[in-house]
Amino acid sequence: MTTLRTTLPLLLAATTLHAQGPDFLYTAKVPELARSGSAGTNLRFLNPNEIIALEFTTMSCNVLSAEKWAPRTSSNTMAGDENGDTFYWNPAIFGEIDGLVTSIGSTPTGITNQRNVFWSPSAAMGTVVSGGAGLRPGDVGRIVRNTTGDGKIQYFIRAEQIQQSLGLPITPIVVDVDAIAFSPNLGVFFSLDGNHAVAAACGVTAIQDGDVLVIPPSSLTYTPDMRIGAVAPGSAHVLFNEAQMNTFTANAAVADRFGACVTSIVDTEALEIDPLGPQFVIPGCTGTVLVVPTLLFTGETLTGGSILTTAGGGQIHVAPCGPLGTPCGAGPTLGLQVGLRPPTAAMGVPSYVNALTYTRHCRFVTEARNHVITSPAPAVLDIACPAPMSWMFFNFAPTGVGAVAPSLPFAWGFLCFPDYYVNTFMANVPTPGGFGTYTSPVIPWPCKTLWQAVTITSAGTIEISTPTTVDVN
Ligand SMILES: [Ca+2]
Ligand SMILES: [Ca+2]
Ligand SMILES: [Ca+2]
Image (cartoon, rainbow, N blue to C red; front, side):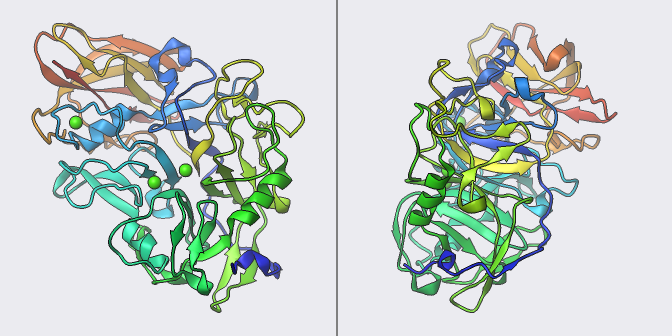
């Protein structure tokens, strides 16, 4: 197979990247626990369809903990009753989040929030609320409010565009995007779940799930807010094939969760551009010059949650708190390096990192103890707050098949969740140490209850949390 990596790097490029770091948002392959225990709250339970934050900028390295950032209930609230069963709660929404990306236009203040980050699901979201094609495994998108209402889908790149870039027919949809990274100067980098017969650039006729592909910037057109407007057919190049990803992986000499040396990638699972890593310019076979950045990557063999880099021909990536994996021969990769709690002192977490993006973000999150309760009962909500005091607000949510709660822009906030759904003040909730718990009055009858907390940050901004909906039977 012809790949670009077989051509020697010609020139160190000085392309400017948009700054997104230095913190991470990522997802774990299977349910995990926050290293900190999240003060005993339910926020400690991290699920594969939830986005986790790893904040080198705000946490000491000796207590570095991954914390819940986009709970299922927040996505459920934004999505509404997408599967038409009259419940907001859908613990299986998205299956897994298997790709994450941010775009320059999505972060006008440089801040990533739960509305402007893009993700790829492993299972299609219901279309009862969104209409249209919905959010499918081959798409990378987000849930937005538009002129027709809440619960709509906006795409960073559509499955149809991925298939066009591979020289495939637009229908039927066969691809599942499994890793994605983007820079307007460098293009869209991606990897798929599964092997496909294609008609991509350079005469490539087959791609594997370990391959890393790129659609170069010259083959992309953008929307005004820097999403992908169109792709040139057959323009995707295999940047690194699976054998080359195996070489990077073997060279990194990282241990898996059991302490065994990992020598192959099997399936590339996450990609991100390292803005501090060297870049090379190589001539593409079609005459298109490609700029190859340093890529952070993970794969399904990288249990324990290690993160590797293509730098130097393949290494364990070094983050502000140290290497993101245990060197081969030095014991297991535990998961502590990405803030997860290992099952024992001698065995790492079962997850690999399934999706990864550099960000700057705020973490102000609510999570229900029970997402479906039977009246009469109180709702109990856990809060992760960036300040030591928060104020809980309430509203009723619409009921019925395909219901979705209306949101409005939260005019004061510009760091945390950007929209509000609530209208009634309920109570002060202390959040010393970053966590707190609120117990509502007894809810006497069946209804849909919607909750958000408000706080004032040390920066002096008024911010609102992610929303939680509790279905009351
Ligand atoms: Ca539902
Ligand atoms: Ca996917
Ligand atoms: Ca993945």
